[in-house]
Amino acid sequence: MPGFQSNRSAQFNARFYGAAALFCFVVLAYFRMRENLFVAIDDPGYLWANPHVRQGLSWANIQWAFTSFDMNNWHPLTWISFMLDVSLYGMKPGAHHMVGLILHALNCILFYFCLYHLIGRWRPAFLGALLLAVHPIHVESVAWASERKDLLSLFFLFLTLIQWDRWVQNRRISAYMLSLLWYACSLMSKPTMVTLPVLFLVLDMVIYGRITKLPDVWRTGPEKGPFWLLAFGSGWLTLLAQSQNQGIQSIADFSLVERMVNAWSAYGAYLQHFVLPFGLAPQVPIQPEKLMLGALVSLIIFSVLVWLILNTKNRYLVGGLAWWAIALLPVAGLIKVGEQAWADRYAYIPFLGLYTALAFCLKKPMAKHPSLATAVMVAMGLFLCFLTFRQVGHWRDSQTYTERIAAVYPGHRVANGSLANLARQRGEFEKAKGYLSLIPSDNWTPETHLIMARIAYGQKDWPMAESAYLEAARGLTPLSAIANAELGNLYLRQQKWVEAEQCFIEADRYYPEFQLSLAGRFQMAMLRKDQALLLKLNQRLKSTPPVPYLMVGFLQGSLLMQEWVLLRKASGPFRVLSLSGT
Image 1 (cartoon, rainbow, N blue to C red):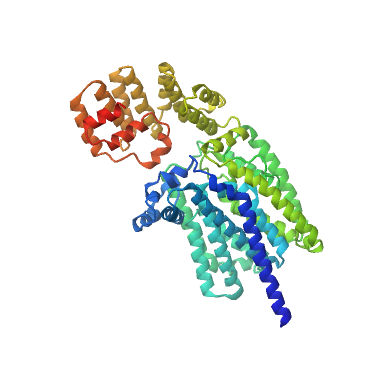
Image 2 (cartoon, helix red, strand yellow):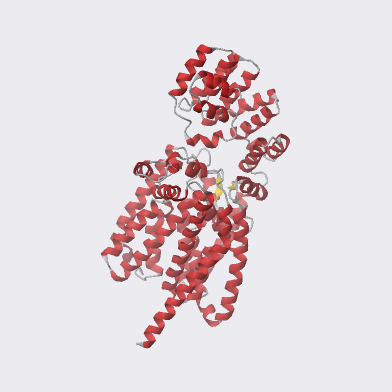
């Protein structure tokens, strides 16, 4: 009996001190996040420009969270998390980032407990959790405020797995129901883990030994039925949200063959960054000229892995690699969302398989040389802390974020376009042109032309501005509405009333609900001293809702933004006249 108590005490000490050490590593690597601001990508829609989030937690906003497809997704618990933060801390970026740090630390501690439960020794368990804690590839999931959904999804996933373990071991119906509940919460934070029912099969084969032959799959199948229903429901809602908001690229934009090659290359890139976490950037552009080379490298890597699997009796290595490959499948790029080839944030959950496999493979060597293992582990942790600390600095603000992308990928269109726009806002027009010149001409988009038009406008180069605005106005998009409205303003400067009016009509025709031409029409009425039109427009202004916050990303830096804000504050035509003249 004393020996049993001593063993229990040793296990408690290992868990407590291991958890405390992990928390210290996370703080050391990520604490500079408290100085970080929000960035221009996604953070406006998720946080500071979202009216529902800005109002904080309320019953009406909770209802909105469960019924909204905002930001191309259905993740109500993520919305509620942001609202709760706003209710507690307001819109302070540092406070939001510190909540992310705490969530990440909790995830690392839970992972440590799970590994310790499976392996029974603290060193390999701590190694696996330490990699999750301080590997630089996870900075995007932790330091980017909008990626709170990653942290929440993994937190609820660990709760799901803990209860699933209780169900498998003790067949407690309460554990089964709790596992189902936590899985639903994970999906309502981010729908990444739609593959969990398949991963349960991996756990049954590798961890629990419940599947040794094919009939065992059907025998254990019914218990996974409700999980399949939740996974299919979440997947359907996600596809619906992405389709409604045009988030998914069509086969015409990115062919199936290109998707498959890109996905295959992505697997190799993730393994490369797992071993060599250098050159990480917030956005990885699709580089068609490098896809085949990436696919060849992936083929070589996978050939080595297959050889290892076929020549090893370590089922945990096979299981860890299977978890990594299956969990990564939904975000590998076969369903194309966004412009990135792959992204660091997608590694947050799949890499658990690699960390687990490594922990099991090093179990015996670490037991033979415990002191050496501890020293190497601490040294590795401190080195990764340094890399992560430096990577967190790249998320300081929109400027450092985009500079990092441009440094790693010099011709990156979005990064150089953003840097050009920031330089334009500071009045550094030649510098802004220099950033745009780094973008290959065949990669220019309407957004790029709009930035060029605003630069030319700032330099009073009217012919160049007109030409660029016309290029930006192509297509029925919110961007074309903005381009037409700003082009109308340009024509007003030249007293081309007919052309200006036509541009305003086009802007309203493309997106009448935004009524972006209203400020320009006011300006035209004032220039022409048309008091009757001023009164008419003022009545229209009173009945016009403010510009939806989803347009904020397009309107940042817009020549019409200041005028629009002034118009929204106006109560009468003469006040509009005086405000617009300042």
